Image 1 (cartoon, chains in turn cyan, red):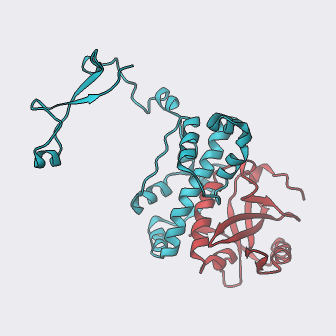
Image 2 (tube, helix red, strand yellow):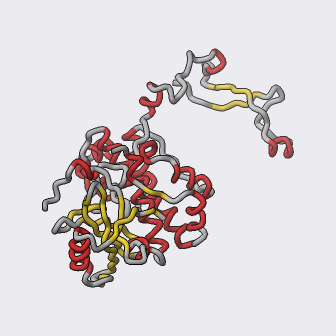
Image 3 (cartoon, rainbow over the protein chains, first blue to last red):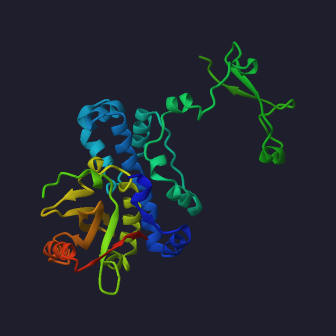
Length: 181
Length: 132
């Protein structure tokens, strides 16, 4: 049986009709936020063949925090700390995107097949599969200067043009102090 | 029956029983419960794509007599859709909500047993459940 046969969903137009109800809308947003995190965590952990203790060790450096992983895998829990989510993202080497969004964006996410969103690839897996462009050799202009000051060309922003004040010099260069490794 | 899963039901495929007018019991139950309906929709989207053996038993749990429950929270209540496996589908026979120790309907488990028996005797129609 293929996964796509498992579910009968209404078409997007009927979903929008449901979303006209504010209570449905609020619950729909909440469900997507909580369920995505909980199911992704569980499936990413299983993909790595880690138990909850191992994930606690990778993410928080302490296997005794297994109960925390268990709570985070419960889609009805929801009392997340952003910092903890960031630590979990780092443990799996995936990105964490948290932002307010229009409903059209949420509907796109809702329409995305679960198989494609349940276990995102890690940074290295994306590099290896070509989903991320591999950086070529460092360009000459990218090299930091000996004193650690890095210069890049930047167009002044609209606000900077209006106010006449800009850190950008006349030739369009802006100085960013970056400590070179 | 034990809670061992036959291979044919490795993923949740939802169906529900329908009354004489063709109205699904779960669809009807959730019709006026928009928050619970929205949560169930998103929850099932995920759960139906994950092998049943990988599901957390807080969300999907074996009860008794071949009955299982899908459990979720909305509106500060716990909601349950109870059903059984038939021909590769999960056939839901009753919905129940509870807050603290107040169950609605009170006799949900006995009703679930009765409806399962009647369904197997062909007294209820079985229809696809459409996530709304």
